[in-house]
Amino acid sequence: MKLFHGVLGLAAICVVVVLLSLLGLIGDFVSGLIGPHITMDGLLLALICLLMGGLFTLMLMLIAKDAGWLDWLPALRKKAAPEAAANPAKPAATAPATQPASPSTGSASGQEK
Image (cartoon, rainbow, N blue to C red; front, side, top):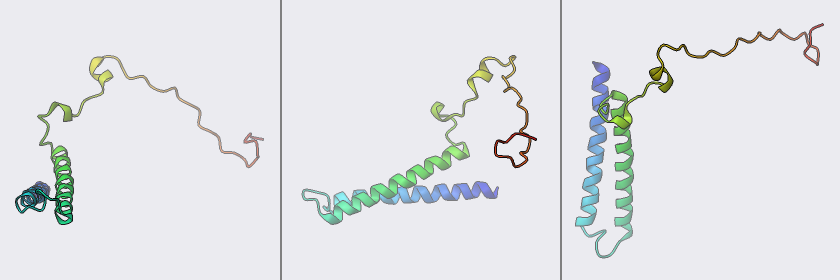
């Protein structure tokens, strides 16, 4: 239960920062910083808002994927191994067993005396 609340808390923080970034972009255009004339302040504010919004959106997507909230999307479902699903009766091929290497006795060629 505690872990679930932690995940919800992280998701809520991400959503708040993304919304504030969107409000910053809207405010940038409404105030005229990025209007007919682009100012350095407007450009930097827009780039910072895009950066913060993008990073926290990516983090929100990773949290949602780990928590299983996006299982309804077919592209993000975990797929089983195709061979095991196609042929469940056939056992998986095993690698041939190799002989364990014997410890060397200190000779340069690595052969036993």
